[in-house]
Amino acid sequence: MRDQRKAEDIAQQRMELISPLLAEGLDPAKARELKVRICEQTSISERTLRRYVAQYREAGFNGLKPKGRGQSKIEDAIPPHVLEQAILLRRQVPSRSVSQLIDILEWEGLVEPNQVKRSTLQEQLTNRGYSSRQMKMYASTGVAARRFQQRYRNKLWHSDIKYGPYLPIGKDGEKKQVYLVLFVDDATRYVLHGEFYPTLDKVIVEDCFRKSILKHGVPEAGFFDNGGQYKNKWMTRACAKMGIRLLYARPYSPESTGKVERINRVVDSFLAEAALEKPQTLERLNEIFQVWLIECYQNRPHSALHNNMSPETAYRSDKKPQRFIDPDIIAQAFLHFEKRKVDKAGCISFDGQKYEVGLAFIGCSVDVIFDPADTDELTIEYDGHNPWKARKLIIGERAGQRPKLPEHLFPEIAESSRLLRAAKKKNDQRVEQYTPAVSYRNVSKGGDQNV
Image (cartoon, rainbow, N blue to C red; front, side, top):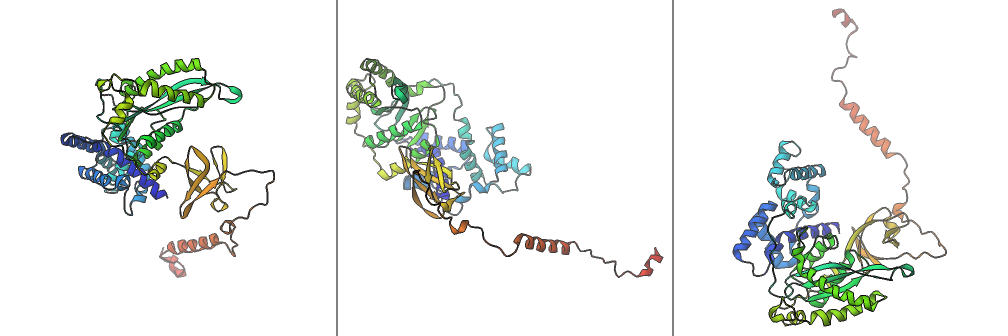
């Protein structure tokens, strides 16, 4: 299972590299320019880049996973202290190429010649967030933002979070603020899904994203800001598995997400009306929001669309086919993975609850696979075992009989100390190794007379 997870991480990194080359209708000259830029920033060859693109087009995300005996040894190929020195060298001079990093490591005697491969070091630097492309990602270009609009639906989606009103949904009627999540189609300005949520975390973005995909298919790309709800390991993995190119706006550039920001300003008129309605529950707020969204936005003329067409009409009349994928792929993409250590009672702690894993795994670290929307049951994975389910541990009034430990956890009775026997053997070898070559026992007693 660990090898599988590493393979998925590598495929995810490769997907990020080639995503600019997957845009539909990309001009050949532009494609060549992108290839040169990617190769310069990442130090991989153009041949390798072409191979990644071909593998993705042939087999999708799974085609990018490494094959062969080396995939589980990638992290072990470079000692941790050597990798840390390579990162330090890159941070000191971000423009240093991978080849230059290897030269310095070899000249300083930290590694033997040809011990570190360029491709392996590049993958490790990318995995840690220190590739040339990653370090230059947010460099300010000084170029003014220009307006853009995609040609057809589901080519690019935007999303944003807007702070909503306070509702009496806390304990004892305490008022708590709610948050609106929107996913918007770039070409048609159509709101794919919008909903108010009670918390501000990445789970609300995942829920809204999933509902948008189930209703309208998968976009070619997603364009989000750099907030932690959007820029995280889960979002990167989910988009890679569904074949969605993941793009982020430059920091401190709100104009790049202007379309969804414009809709947020329109939502202000709804909030003014909702304040008069005084909804007392989250369900009621979402109910009146959906009515407002359909009648006051989706089906109203939009000045940015051709002939002032409404977003609903523009989206529905678009001739570009929607791309729906296998529900199992969607389900896998929206799962989360975390590690937990099994305690001496055979349980793990997760989300403030205890889940019974099994006494056979006491002291082991297991992988926990779960849907954040439903944590009543978790899937547990451990090397050498088939995945199994773990449910919340119900603590009753009586503890019940203590379960028996598995046989492999009992101490084994020994007849003698293997440590002392091994130490005696090692000592005998040491004495034999250091026995003097010349013995003075056979020197005659009269020898002193010649001194």
